[in-house]
Image (cartoon, rainbow, N blue to C red; front, side):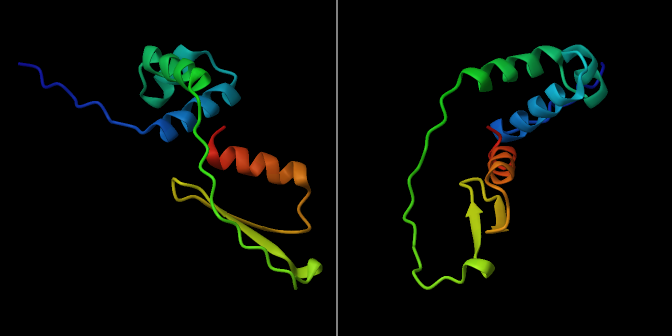
Length: 106
């Protein structure tokens, strides 16, 4: 009797990163899936699912400090998934947008 391998369970966030990496790779779904040990049908389903799902937004309290030294000001973002992103006021807003999008996978 052949031994069946157990499928690795991945979270939606992990699949989101896999889908994003696949899209950046320039490979076909079948090529990328084969190279990374995924089923092409599973990868394409997650691409569809993540492209059509609605992302809930949770509002959180923000503390504003009045006496901030602008030259030395910094910020920190912690996502619900536990990712941390830190930066300072010298980062261009477009770079911050790209970084935040890549961390939260949207």
